[in-house]
Length: 313
Image (cartoon, rainbow, N blue to C red; front, side, top):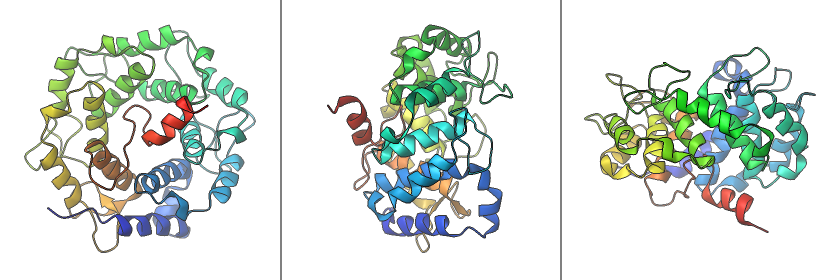
């Protein structure tokens, strides 16, 4: 088994930020807020957050905020709950939540709750349990969960539970590891994990490990490094991580590294990207890999950041 090429990954993340004229940069321009969260959280987990100019990043984030209080994926784009959470998370990383008008941001998020307890992603009304998690996570970090009807939010998530123990994006939707993370984490944050059948769900999740050691998101799919987060964090929250082979998963993640230029791909020998680099390192954090800081499985931020938010005076 190789080792984590941490220094190469740091260089890769910094290079991605500088390449504004590449094809990838143009295609992903509207996702830049998410990219900032993925890249900066990876740097923090590797103990290298200080290599970036936090003031420059914060200034850019605030330029992405709309009158509504929500944040866009980049300057000049429309606000969405997805990018709003990433903005909150990055500001939390830098201990700069004080730059926010918390009431304005939390009112924007709370305003996206529907009558049945679900959440829309933006004014266009798409509903998904991802947005339930995002709203609950963001409002919890801002200490404004009382702005929504938590009971209805929890009941909606429970209505998306399936007979296999998993969760879908809406009631009756197929169980998927990404949606399971969103639902389990939202229930964990709201103190409602007792609604999860931990053995049944744990069985479904541990069945996602394939022969290579990697994890997939649904039965019969190929393994993908990003599920090292979605599956593993869910198993962590329901205390069933010991049902998979940690050693095999670590080996799979390390085999997806570009050890020359940095970055992690979805599968060995594929092209690397910032998304899989983050989820690979976050997965290694949950696996207690040496040299990687601990990450909170529900909030998807380093444990010391969460401790600072909730336990510092």
